[in-house]
Image (cartoon, each protein chain N blue to C red):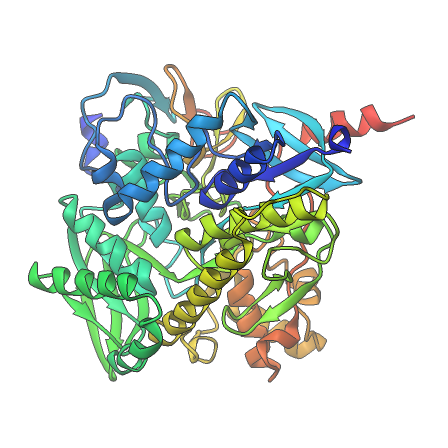
Amino acid sequence: MKATQRDAIFLRLAETQRERVAFTLDGQALEALVGDTVLTAVLTQGARLRVTEFSGSGRAGFCLMGACQDCWMCTESGQRLRACSTFITAGLRLLSRPGAKP
Amino acid sequence: MSAALQPVVIGAGPAGIRAAQTLLRYGLRPVVVDEAPLFGGQIYRQPPAHFQRSKATLYGFDTARARDVHAAMRAMLSDIDYRGQTLVWNAEGGKLDLLHQEQTSTLAYSHLIVATGATDRVLPFAGWTTPGVFTLGGAQVALKYQGCAIGSRVAFLGTGPLLYLTAWQYAKAGAQVAAVLDTATFGQQLAALPALMADPELLARGLYLVAWLRAHGVALHRGVRPLQVLGESRVRALRWSQAGTEHELDCDAVGFGYGLQSETQLPDILGCRFGFNALQRAWLPECDAAGRTSVAGVYLAGDGAAILGADAAEWAGERAALALLADTGRALGPQARGATLERQLARKQRFRAGLERAFPFPAQWAAQAPDDLLVCRCEEVSAGELRRTSRENGATELNRLKALTRVGMGRCQGRVCAAAAGEILAHCSAQPVQAVGRLRGQPPIKPIPFRLTHALASQEAP
């Protein structure tokens, strides 16, 4: 977790006294806080959620309210989720590229 | 008659909640369908369970209204059929198609109040897809809903009341605001003052925000032109110009937007007639002062009908519900205040016209957009591709341009890029923007799992 925090986009300003929850991103073990969306869980430690299908450039969401659809991620089991409107859960195994081996 | 009456309210923001409350008051039991896990809409969005900040911290000036709207909804939860975390993704033959926790179902309605709210109006600039660039509304969601700033040093850019409000909310919460960059000029804002007097309280609030930001050392610039976000994998700086002089602002996040746009996909699918709204510079479903659309039994309320803000949304929700009740033969009695609500809404309309003068659409945007500017972030279509296609294929209408270039064809269905694509097409084909038309809404209005559409199709097979 420490190793990636310097890449974080989001900065926590409040509500930091919450229980921790463990998940993985591209195979790396990370921790978030209960009540974080998947988007918050990832962007408080890394600089992207996904890469685009066309140019392969990184994306980190945009509208945060379920309109722009630019924060779809997938899990290692192939489930797709919209990061801004899905809460992080313990043991969630996220991928920033669909089908990629962690 | 009442046995056959099944009103459905779509959206649980200020408009939807007041609509449902009014229906309930007259003995109807509405279904309220809302996509969010908790009611309140975007402006009165509630944080997840166990978050600690007070309502005053979360809602600032709007604390009392937020409290009222939340309380109104809470008080009727046992009397209405409230369905949170439920997306209405299609409407057909008197039924809505719903998606709730990966399950589809249908919901029959006799009457519908659509209160689907608004999203940020976006005008792309170079580098706007870089991680760390969010809408102003998105920047607010991060703070209000998650207790996070979108960056360690945030620039706010664009125009509209939300620009100053979001910057103030960030600064108050302890975030570092790099600058507030407004594309509108000071002269435009001065000229709008008489019209803004239609709502002295909101005008005073706006002036207070500007004064507060200045007093706290936040750099404010007007008459700005956004040039480029610098940084490859994340935001490193923002280039902008003012009166021909270029500047570079050190920041690691950008919140930007140019006012709001109505979320109109459902009225479109429902077959409502649309007309061009010059003030909002957009095609909107037509409705009368009470919210009646061209389709019998379908009503609109709140920012989804036209951007008038949260106070007006409450009035419009009540007004639309009263119209529904009157249209179904209910005796409303002398306490029904339809005419008063319409007067309040008309007054807000005048204020809104003032806002449009104070924070005008940047008229030069399409002319200045470089060819390599990405317009559609889903399908990664550039301004140059749009111009070339329009020129080479003679495309002068937006759906034709979509078919040829895939602009607006991606997952967001053009919610983000349609306004910009329309501006580019209008400019390069030398037409007024209303002449290029509007992207047609398509079900599902938001992505749903493919296996669900498949399951649905096999159910319907004979």
